[in-house]
Image 1: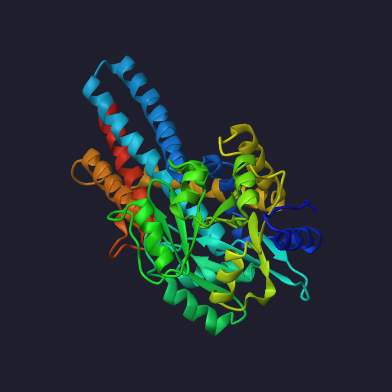
Image 2 (image 1 turned 90 degrees about the vertical axis):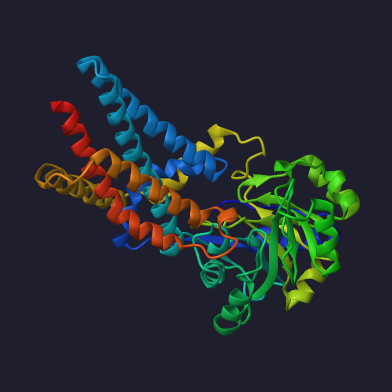
Length: 437
């Protein structure tokens, strides 16, 4: 059983944090065997989760695809002395590999978030506190789940309170609140938004959108407080503003832990000196493990009560001390955590999953040789399909493209299941054409 630690800036918060660290338990449920094909992906493509940000993970996949394509194209150039043909081989292989890695990564995240059971907080039924995650994203801003799905995910993992904080918008809040009232009436759902400016800010209890596109940081903070919101600096160690400057602008508290990152001694000293709330938030978008939580009094009852508790700093950040990493991203520790997470669910599912992918590889090999050649220009087909799939993924995930209507991640995955094999068959024709040229 992993031990828990806490951080709080007031005696009331300290009592909650200490009690929760002693009485909260976490349990891990095994996935059903039909999810066994996912297990080998966690050991391979899942290493992209080690990156400190999704963009770095995608960049790593691009570098890997570029390396493979460059090696094959260089051998083609050396053997045949045809630079144009080698360039065609490079373009086809790079596109095919990158789209494959991208789809497998997003598919793994989607399955793990939607279907994997993962960990669950166990809170004693008579506990005088609840666990909250006050920083969560839905598909409105790059998450894997609908607003309703975000509520369900948190309820099933033991959280008693949630703030939906999509980027620069409150568009999904009404849906989340309505779903919670119907299916999880004991859960407190708070309206919120993550303002993404020079420093990211959580606006908890906000009623109208405040966008970083047309509102500078200090004005946004004052606008949110004018609406009655509690303003919390989100992963402030990644922002451009110092902690004291943020407080001077009107920030009322800080995320001490954000997922598996923590703010360190400077942030904690400031919060303790000024009695500012310290929160433990997931910054949830996808995944199966609840890594941290904010401990709040069970008596909060509703949004107004929760915001009042935050203003009093009657809260604590709850986290696993061996899992949190400093804000400078220690790669070795991140890699160790990824390995331990994979090993914790390995065994029979890994064997069955390996057999599944071996069978699928044999089937695709037969299709590779038996399928008729594609019509038209195969390189154009590869590049067109690949560009379309990457653009669709960006439209599903990147918040700047989601200010209006945007496709769901399921749309991308459905198109990828059809488009990725088509890309590889066209890539086969590019290789065959340049082998015989």
